[in-house]
Length: 493
Image (cartoon, rainbow, N blue to C red; front, side, top):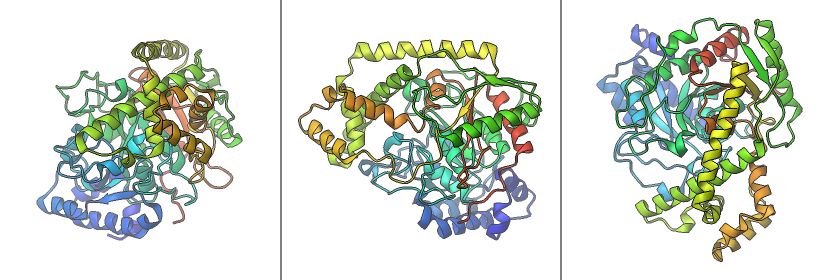
């Protein structure tokens, strides 16, 4: 199977031709591996090849709705028994997973052929994919720019045609940000829809979830069916599934929707004219499809939300570092400075402050719910501007030196209370200020690739739905895809 033929199919299409016997799974896998070997040296999307394991899997036979479709896992939380889950960290290079994650089991049961794991920032803590352990992943549309993070390796691989769909996850925008950077579709399911097992009840109080990035809406819809196929009886929730499969719901015409939109950053930081144009273009397209679109936004304190998110994010980083050191014996130099600084900031967080922030999550959730009483969806930019250049978000050298000193003196906690540190933390969210709301509130959200910048870079827009809004998002995305096709667009690698 030549690459030109392989690239024409999405995952559903590949599964169909395999099921009909028109092509063998071995041929499809070799096409994917061939494409990976051709472009990965420039992209650095795949950091753990699993070619021999995948070849053995197709030799022994596969079955399921995605039987014979090549697939990549994100190298974070998506454990494959007997192989490392590196998490973008030097500390986990040789640490082997004892069993499959629940979501990986579901993918394997669906017949997907896993042949590698993709790059991610250390423990998924950044919106770019530039870990020191494996080096930066580059955007197939322009190798000088980021594919986003933290699912940047997966997004780069899908955009470059290595696979039609790949594993991803989202704790603060990590599905939607890379999808927006790479011209892909990215759906973040709502809280409790997908399992985080077996080692977690839920990540980050349910703000984080597994998922995929894909070229087509129907791939993401069928993937959601696969990932929710069996209840995780050890998990904290029994998900309320719709009456029919997501794949079928995605094929249904959406009702006429009322959509509120904003281009104002919740942090009060600048929003690039390209991001504004992306939303305005989407609003015009939606109106042409019969939807009602008007300026509106939730009534909440966006800067307070960001600071609560970052404080709790730092505590999550501290807990992760402590767990990894306990399990592996890693030393402090096995972790990046930025990760250690983020974890160090948690030393100044009192339990009462943490619980107060968690309580405020309810305030933000109620405010978004009030918005959804008036509007079916919230439309925003997915990013505050075009994908940034590689290295653009590196911590400035003076702050790195200051941070090293504070860590050495064990003063990182008190230092994190200073205006300099606080402003730097919030500045790190300025390129991606729109995505954390859906994580904190547990609402489903998606990035849809409706815009290209003047320089030819993708720039997606975000839609946020209310509770149980995945069917609405999928049906609207399919309508937009039919009106404004994107899957056939290919970067000039």
